[in-house]
Each structure stands twice: as C-alpha cells, then as structure tokens.
Image 1 (cartoon, rainbow over the protein chains, first blue to last red):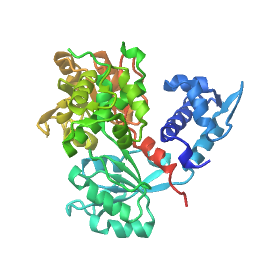
Image 2: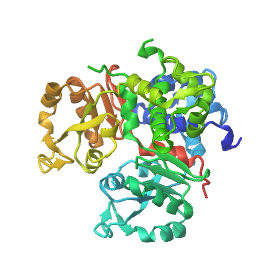
Image 3: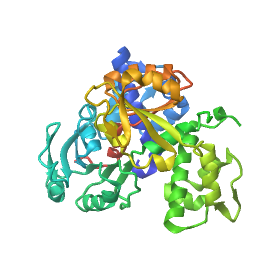
Length: 209
Length: 209
C-alpha cells in the first residue's frame, strides 16, 4: 500500500491516536484498550478508528482490543518516529524563542538542531543550547547536514522567499507560523499554525450578545 | 437546526472556506466561484464542500456557483464573526509576546484586549498597546468585562490551574498553547496548538534514511 492511497485526513489522526495511547499508558498503567475507549476519549467513532487503523494492518483482536504498547510501536513506525528528526528553525524572534524552548519536541522525535535569523543582533545568541546562525549560511548548513524539516517563524513578508530558499536545498516538510499560504512544489508538505482559524472554529459555539 | 446536529469537523472547515474565499477576492477580484474551484484549491472534494454548506442553507445555484461576497457574508454570520471578539491572553512570555503582536487577529474579528502574567517584572509592560496586568486581577477583569474567549500561553504546570480559574469566571472558549490536555466542563470549547502533532503528521511522508 502506498502513501497515495491513504487519505491525508487519516494520516492526520494517527498522531492524535499516538498521543492518546501514550497518555493512557502514563496515567493508568493500562496495557490494553479498545476502539470504543479510544473513541470516547477523542470524540471519534470507534468505527472510524478501526477503519483508520485497518489501512495499515491488523492491530487488535475482536474481544481483546489493542495492546497499547504494541499499537504505540506500530504507529511510531508508520509515522517514522523511531528515529530523531533534526529540525531547522528559521526566525529567532519571540515566536522562535518560544519554539526553541518548547519542551516537548525532544521526547517526541524532534530536535531543533539549527536556528537561523537575518538580524545581526540575534546571531550568536544561545537559544536553549543552539547558537543562532546568520541566514546567509542557511542553505549551506541545510545541504551539508541533509535537513529536510523546517519550522518557519519569520514575518509574513519574508515567508515565501525563505520557503523558496529552503525548498531549493532539499527541505521537504515545513511547519509555517507566518499567516500566509506558501507556494511549494507537490513533493513538499506544509502544515499551517493559524490561531485565527482555531478561534473562528470556536466562536460558532458562542452566544454573541 | 441546532449546533448539536452539525459535526464539529464540518464547523472546523468553515473558517478554511472563509479564508480561501477572502483570498480569492483579494487576489483576483473574482465575484463568483464553484465548489469545484474551492475544492481544487483546498484538496477537498467538491461534493464534500457542497454537503458541508448544505447544513446551513442554499448558498449557490446549479450552473452559476457561489457569489463570493455573499458566501463570505453568510460564513461570517454562521461563525459569529460580524462583531469583534475581545480576547484575554494569559502569559506574557516569548509566546505571549508573539501572540500580542500577531498582525492578523484584528482584521479577522479578534482583539487581544487584556494580558495577564504572574511575573512582577512583566506587569505594566506595554505589549502592542495593551498593558500586562497581574494575574491576581484576572478573574475580576474577566467578570467585569464579560470576556468569554482566552488564549493560554503559560507553562504546562500552570495550565490546568489557570484554566479552572478562567472557567470559573465565565470563559467559554480556550485556545491552548501549553502541551497538556485540559479538563473542562462540556460547555467550554478548547482548541490545542501543538507543533508536535503537526510535525508528526508530515514525517509520515518523508523518507527516513
């Protein structure tokens, strides 16, 4: 089965399943669970969960459910998280600082290994153990190190230009915090972090008075 | 039709449709579009788009498609964006700074009107025109002003306690940046901003070598 055959929306749910399974283990020391229990915690139907997982194989048994540690292991393998991914962070402003100090990357398969900025005042600064490098060296470092994942924490006006430069030297996945839609070739994956979309999704439920 | 009848995943797509329609108008000055065109831009099937919109009424005509400005207006009404929502920001660290200076809130229906922190060094600081207030005054200000939306940019260890305090004084929607699952009553909506989930969703597509 190839990546093309599995809808991206299914892929998007796998990290959520993985996070929930990890929490179940930590909280309760449970060793097994069911699609019903997972579904209740997530507000997703058990049928949907079984269907999502069935794309990748047979992970549970009728009646006994899923072995949590086995399912975690399988999901980590499917999502290619059994290695550490080094990530290039572009932008060392307030948001870049927050991301460089984000405590959850390293326990979840990622490490901010390089930070770039074009502000001479920031270059050389130590951000959580990583020195900020001049963005003029960005391409050379990424090519030499073979980085393929980048986080974009730059101003809107710079986002497309930086993206073009990143893609040209082999970046294949971009988590973009700039509020702008990026033009990338089809082989490059982009995820957008957009607080406006998240807020607008909640106001629907609020009484406007 | 009540909110309960429409799946949350459909609600979650409406802001994406709205953003895309706004861009279509800005970029090209177009006045009409179709579910096909919208779908192509978003990687969503045209049938799904028509089905999503049909929950709320009849917005287009067979053959002529959608009037963009009318559909924008309707989506803004459905999402309750025809007013300005004042938002309370809790946490004035790096992330709080980045959010206070985020340029897209005010053109999209939101304004960070109050900022709270418990660090005496930050209290009184002017962040994009808003003074940081002591978190001890948080409850009084929120009650007095009738705020119902909050953004949480606090350390993980403080997130649940702050949430409990916010919910107790009437907050009904929380955008949470702390990497922790919040316990809230059913009437409170929470959205999570989690870069780990977004990165994990992309590594699936990467060659791990």
